[in-house]
Amino acid sequence: MSTETTHAPLIIDVAGTELTAADRRRLADPLVGGIIHFARNWESRAQLTALNAEIRKIRTDMLICVDHEGGRVQRFRTDGFTRLPSMRTLGEHWMHDPMAATRAATACGLVLASELRACGVDFSFTPVLDLDHGESSVIGDRSFHRDPRVASLLAKSLTHGLLQAGMANCGKHFPGHGFVKADSHVAVPVDRRSLKAILADDARPYDWLSNTLLAVMPAHVIYPKVDARPAGFSSKWLGDVLRGQLGFDGAVFSDDLSMEAARRIDGKLLSYGDAALVALGAGCDLALLCNQSVGEGAPLDELLSEMAKARADGRWTPAVRSEQRRRALLPRTPAPAWAELIASESYRHACALLQV
Image 1: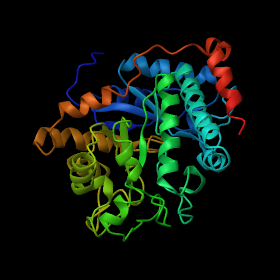
Image 2 (image 1 turned 90 degrees about the horizontal axis):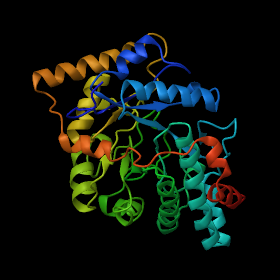
Image 3 (image 1 turned 180 degrees about the vertical axis):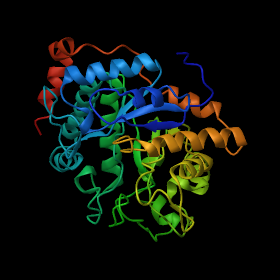
């Protein structure tokens, strides 16, 4: 299949450890630019590597992604994968020895990215830049620290490790999910602070790391003093603040459109297709729809159909710049095979540094 396309904005998933005929059909759709894996797609390193090779045959420039942060959000944990520390563990380490903590964070990024890439995964949605206000159960120990300076420095160190292994990064969840208690997977969190207060605290890492981050994922949180829409559907947050005020020019992913907070826009529950259109229209380059391939996968087919119709009707126009941002996240160097990786001195040294 040709890799030439003007814009492939959708990130979808597949149901199991092997591709079905329906998976192949969806992945061949020119609107699909990426796939996100979950634990259900994992059986072993050999199986995951074979699955990703099959995906790559369908589309050579497919961005193969996963949420693989460390701690409780780590999709692959067995068959040689290193159990990575939570980000809070690195933050606690900072309080005793800042330099050792930054070194461990870099090692974490290198191990994380190296192991994924050795199995054919291109990209992980990490690091989490949310601050630990002690309120959010969904963020919790995924956060480095309450202090935005500590969070930023540790995140920058982790992204350096990712870069050493040839992997891009994604800061999330802009402008900050840690202050609100509600879980946006099942509710619509509301943060009533002012723009000035948010920019001075939770959003500081995005300012300080604006020339380090290659991608950003906004929060499914409403900040009513800025906009009535969640950040990922708000041109004020994505256009005026993130791109305008903070100068960010990388890729912007929507968070999962299947989440409760994702499709309740302006008081209405939108279809997946309409939610994707709103996210793209607000300034996202890519839209994720997760966990809808299980069973018949009808929601994914509806999304693809609605997006194709929107393009034909002129309600959505492909953006060449967005496609360039997607392609910029693809690895530019070949990944070592697993045996070569575990024999390398840099990898073994990084693993030793993770004993924090």
